Length: 136
Picture 1 (cartoon, rainbow, N blue to C red):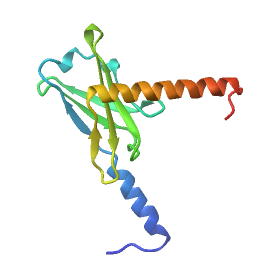
Picture 2 (picture 1 turned 30 degrees about the horizontal axis):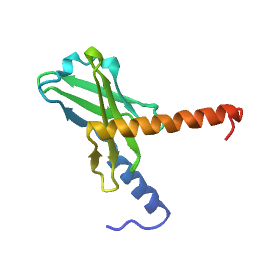
Picture 3 (picture 1 turned 120 degrees about the vertical axis):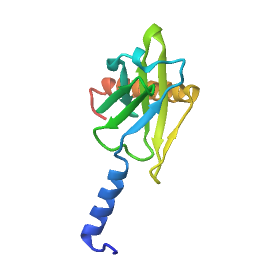
């Protein structure tokens, strides 16, 4: 059945958005035990380095974390899985949702470089806004 008319775009857009709303599982190597990661130290950050509401379920048996966002991820936007572990160890995994509903992830080095670049950009933006009295 083909959907046409004014409602067609709304339905197609809604379906497209729903495709980006899912839960996913991140499995860790044996060297890093998920039960050593404090739950308050786990977060998903968006491109503005703000927390994205997300539910995390730690599964020590599988050494994994189930990640369920409260809202769909936006395609082509960079997000970061960030976890602060014990002994000052940090995990940073950058990821992007592609248009065809696939998740592209980046290695730790690339993820950290992306996070640093975005952090600097956001800091400069905040500084510029402060100089202008909070108006863009």
